[in-house]
Length: 304
Image (tube, rainbow, N blue to C red):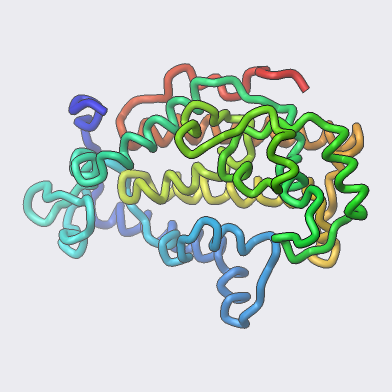
């Protein structure tokens, strides 16, 4: 990341402008987290939605806080003068400072930029059919997920054995059972993640929420919530296409073991790839003042 990449012309928001945006953001975030917060208060678990707050271990309060994005000056904002990665901008004005973030979190800044740019530069692959969740229970006696299987264990195993596993995402692959690992085309690692991540992957789309959170005040609050909504929508398909019986939770299965289920999965997967590609470009623009190079995230890539 070059110095030129972080020094772009800032906008300025008067106090009445930015406080109004912050309030609108808080209301939207509270609505997005309302059901989870109510369940948490009752001590209830949910097999689909808890993932958004456990795997992505950010409390709802983090979503509720609005930031303007890198280089946007907030006038009359003395209360934010001590906030991390905010810098003085004259008088009581402050500004989220991408240069300060890069100096403080050099390795993280480099990783996030590589992940966003490299993922955006690749065509999406749409032939995995969500089989990563099936590979996590392949020939397994004990399952990580509390819900029962839709098919028998033998039936679930047969679905895995009749397909070519094509998972490119390390944080899914690392949960494959021992027997499923050698069946995958690739052997992703943490080190190879920037080289393998591609925009058709559901988890790469969900991870945009994680990257937005890690960038903190450099990402506009509205964009953070858009990334959270994408993660929420993808999570539903991830569980609909999974081998689990979640009918007790009102989840309709997408039966990827059938031709009809595959077609539905790929259609929705492509839609998420389009949304994710737009979010990557917006993140890079907000953070560094420049778009993702090429951003061909919805190209054909590998044929189904």
